Image (tube, rainbow, N blue to C red; front, top):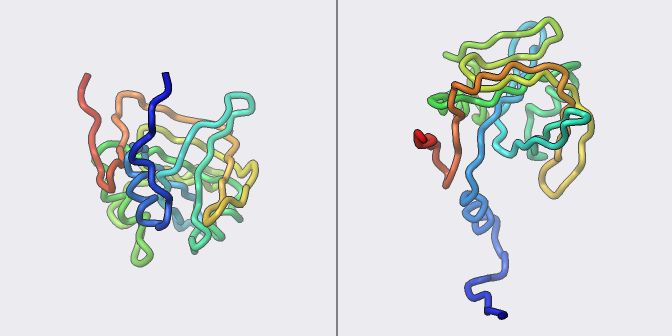
Length: 168
């Protein structure tokens, strides 16, 4: 039996897409490294697992980012999947001005990757590939090491707001 698809409308604006993409919940990550002992980082909600062999994840970075050109030059990147209640960390990392790490506890590894304390997952990565895609680059990251804390609930972004997972 065939049914009609009512309600499908042409895509005409970026705002229309942002609203539509907000229907899908995502975790929030911090991609960070040290530059001369000072942490540099950005927030990315477009994060996903890609492959187990080789171990790869992806993040999407907007072409207008002024932080990514700095991070992409670092030998290692720390990716932290932010934990519930770390919305203030995300907000600062997404900001364009001020100290993005003010009030944030962080650690740095010997290789220069930086991790946010209280995150549910840390991934120590190098860049595997960058794929230009529209107004973003898809960045594939090769995972060299990890620390997971499944007991820490993740920070969830949905409908342009931070949310909590319901206890099950």
